[in-house]
Length: 452
Image (cartoon, rainbow, N blue to C red):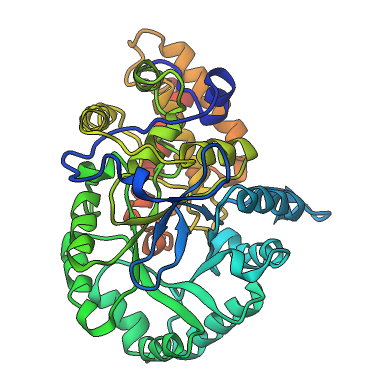
């Protein structure tokens, strides 16, 4: 495995524009959809908009995911959102046609809604759509759920929510416990009637049986939209306890429910691909970035209303705006090429961490996402050794240990995990986090003792 190219480096080297990485299989009637869609004089060629079939909202196909606002340290060393930079990102996004902003009470340790509200309040309310969520994971009492709901309006400085989601539901049992038994779904339906919620939906992570059970509730609740994980790998290779995106999208299309797409880059993993994969994509389209292939893929299905991206840096925002201004939907040959690419990606055994940080804070101070993402980075860069007899073992050993100590402070490293399992209940990817942390810890100990 050669070194990977991260997105920022690729943009410096190759410019920015349109590519996507892998796997649609069969996506009927997609090529050319963008040409019949609405476009406005924003960006290069005009941002592509999709129309919400339920109420006629003209939604930018690029949505701003507010889970990864830029962070800085305050005077006490605490991580806080860089509000000034966030304001600039929001201003640029709106100026170039982006009008959908997705946040949640739990994002960035509870800071995202407030920062998003501050940034958006500086623009006319009718110029953007706000999406937020009822994130009552650990305490789904009616009292706590109501408080969380009302606090979102205060944080976002608004008197209505355009798109409101029941956050990260895996199946009917979780839905019943968190929203039915406490009466919250009935309350939210009334709020929708009153106009304080304009569209009501849910986000899904889970197995096919859980998805089918939730789809069966549509006749009763009339979901206005659903947020799903869709990218070129998960289209037919979701694996583990997740559901292939192809099946999710097809079931929504049958019912006429528009989808909002999360994780088009799999938490950034599809923009930080091994160099072999990056070279393959660049050869197919020298003008485009690795990431733009993924965004073209996510925007190609007709039932997709909006594709979310957590854009921390201005160059990421600019690249995505270019990709969607306007969207050039993938043709059948490109879809087949990306399916082949998705299959090649299976040869790189990374842990499916999307850096959502739902597992944090760890009660023992472990930096779970940093440990998992560092491991993934080393897999992509060929710095994982299987035996001391491997060619290049010494170099890989040193590279892993040095970069690990730089990426994760000593007191937050994997060897501190006691396997309490607190983190597992919150992981939307159903990762067995203690197992992976212990596996990484054992590998590091062998490297340090030179006993591999």
